[in-house]
Image 1 (tube, rainbow, N blue to C red):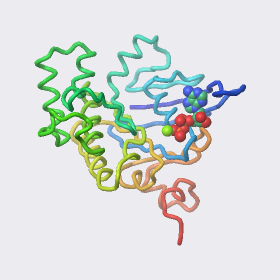
Image 2 (cartoon, helix red, strand yellow):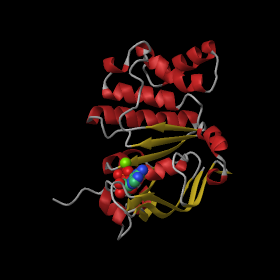
Image 3 (cartoon, rainbow, N blue to C red):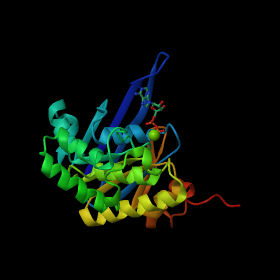
Length: 247
Ligand code: ADP
Ligand code: MG
């Protein structure tokens, strides 16, 4: 469903001369229906990597293929169209404060030109799916962090995406809300047959939900594989990162 081939992303350095190689030759394959994790320390290129998957960033070189389409070859208008088949969830929810939960879920449908009655019907259905049917009229300020993230997930699902990209989706949440959001992601993945790519610096999150993961370090994939297999390997930087340090 997602295939990156030797992807590099070089930015001009902020506030100084020179360049930053944010992603340095990453190749990655995520199968349809898989729950895949990308872990790594801060600054290792995780957010850039997800933004490359939905072409919010264009690769400096290499190719990005999603659902059989080589997105990195497409012109901007076609990329915008293709991006509708991907939902994205962020650390700080990025909800519109002036809109209700339902209004937020309807927003992408409005942008896509979906009629009012259909938008309302879809938003109600999606809020039910994330167990927030009762809070459809609440504004973000009236919701907890976990509830806000569930609204953001409902919004990300509005365009019936095949792929859900989550960038530190639980990093701003407490333990209980994190568990709730992870359970929800697992459930929507199963019910809707989604492919999920989850970026996190929280190893416990990866262990709780991912089928597979890669470890990024300074823009490169240094280890990866199916979790069940990685955890039994003798020498695995990813397993070392996942397992709690010995006391
Ligand atoms: P992570 O999400 O793992 O913390 P990022 O992908 O945000 O890492 O960043 C990787 C590196 O690329 C960092 O050194 C960061 O400062 C740099 N970077 C990211 N985006 C930009 C940008 N738009 N311009 C310049 N440098 C950037
Ligand atoms: Mg990041």
